[in-house]
Length: 180
Image (cartoon, rainbow, N blue to C red; front, side, top):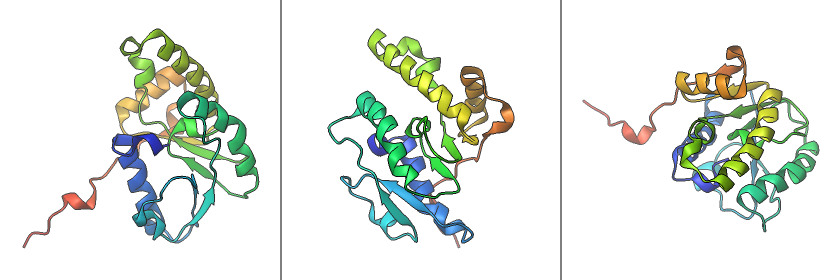
């Protein structure tokens, strides 16, 4: 979910989660779904995880790629026997994800700030919201980054509070300086 957002908030969130999660537990094994046409960061490559390749349709991007993945990703996922999937962006999940899943839904800006977008973009967001609404309702759990985002998700997606979890974000280790 952070492919096109590597230098933005969701990109940092996703990268740090991928980098740290396998290091905090040895009770789970992790498989990362990766686009074989993209370079994997060395910090991720060095982790004790398996990689599953899904390229999708390389000719599609943005909205078209989203629709294409709704059709192709379930086939890739059905070949695996995971107990749980965790999608780092709610619209990376599909309507046909074949096992329980958790989605990250960090904000609702496309819905709460429709006045910032043009008519065509609002139409696209409306279609994605319709699909996203079904994905969110099928999810076993939703993670978000703040109590305010949780309230917005409850409002815009009509999801019960107990399904939404707020694991507060931490500062990256590079921001810590040892002191005497």
